[in-house]
Amino acid sequence: ATRWQHVFRHVVFCILISRSVSSRDGFRMQADMWRAVATYMALGSVFFAAKASVLTYYSQQFSTHWWPASFDFLAALFVLSSWRQRVQGMLSHAAETNATQRAAAGIAGLLGDETTRNALARATARFRCIHLSDLSAADVATNSPSPVLFARTQSASLKHGCDAFISHSWSDDSAAKWTALQGWCADFEAQHGREPRLWFDKCCVDQTNIEDDLRCLPVFLSGCSTLLVLCGESYLTRLWCIMELFTFTHMHGEAGEIEFVPLIRPGQEQSDSKLINEQLANFDAATCRSSKPGEEDRFLGIICAAFGSLEEFNKVVRSIFQQRDMIPSQMCDNVVAIRSQKRDNVIVGIEDRKYGSNISSDAICEDHHTETGCGDADDANAKYTEEFV
Image (cartoon, rainbow, N blue to C red):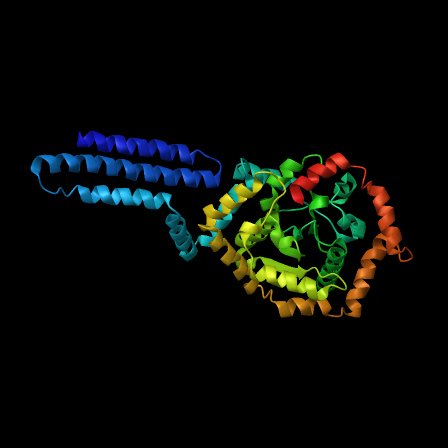
């Protein structure tokens, strides 16, 4: 009887493990595997307890089989408790390959039902970039989809064919965002002698096939040399923005570069700086939100699967900001610093190449708004807003 009990226990365990491995969802796979382990230990506890009860009854002595029965019972409780998540987070943090494992978990979750091989092939064909000279302030002011902007993009190689992935929240101030983009691109051109190639969601996502491009976002991140974070008052509350930040960091490792630019509105420098600094110091993933129903639970589940707990994830977020020297004094210095004449000349040059030096900025915005037809695509805008805002 004892032999068949062990056989039954192992068969059940193998069946449960096989079912968990077949899942394409990384979080669900891990949860199912832990439940399989808990079931295995629970069955062992039942079998040992039954045997110990029979031996104790007939021998009138304490049976040593109570020890493995107790051990298996406590192990099953541990596997199903929050303590297991804490221990898992500690071990994951201490492992030498933790960065790679976390990146893989994040990418698998973001890809959803898409296999890694198919996502890579799809992303290779769909990866695009754009120059700032092909954009205007009006393009950054609204997230209304525009096929005209997508037509201005060009295909890019995933082997760092794009200089910067623009990570931002559409809820942040558009004027401050445009100023930050101009300044960063001007500095890049002054240093490299050419315009940077940018991945900007409104332009580089094919509006006729948004779902396919969304599945490719983690792969698009890997093709960009720099993650340009335009951090306004809402950036650290958007779940997609945070997932972009960590996916890029763990995929690129030390070679990856994150450039952090706070968005400070004129006349509100003190209040904006204070708010952003407080958000950086007190970041909590549990407060991040997504407009798409069900996405928050899925992303937070991915985070728990990769890091063990939300608190471990929060610690890594704060450490990234610290490692990148994203401290209040430097942020304030970056905001109030006076740009050099060389940098201003480059900005003017970017505008001149597209619009000519005699056209006012107001005329540029008005002309481009008419050209792209922003405001006349309510249905498309609703879908686009659902995915990115």
